[in-house]
Image: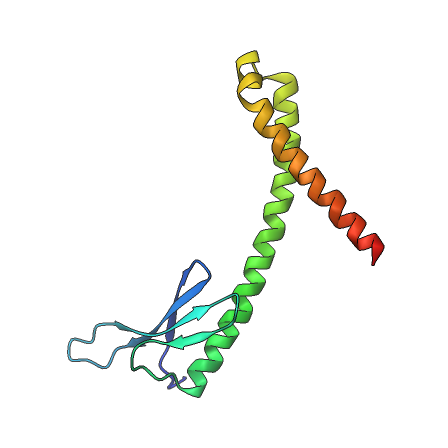
Length: 131
């Protein structure tokens, strides 16, 4: 069994707050002492207050950063696949079930979003072909 103090990562926007899980107290309760804050984009690890992470803790934080980035990348790909499905579902809804009131309410925002997406995709494809 490992003698290292376990860490708890409280995920938040752009990273996590990292806590040391401590059980060495009289009441034998778990205590979370904030150790650091992680910025997922930059990979920066900022110690909290006077806390000094050990080398093993820093290594564990680096592993968490790598794993978290992989998770977020995977979720982003899933979001795009769901967006394609949602666009198809919206087309079916507009054709088969939408009332005239629904069309009046949603047509302009949907067309603007699709126009924006189309323009970005065309620009990116042209940029890629130019390289």
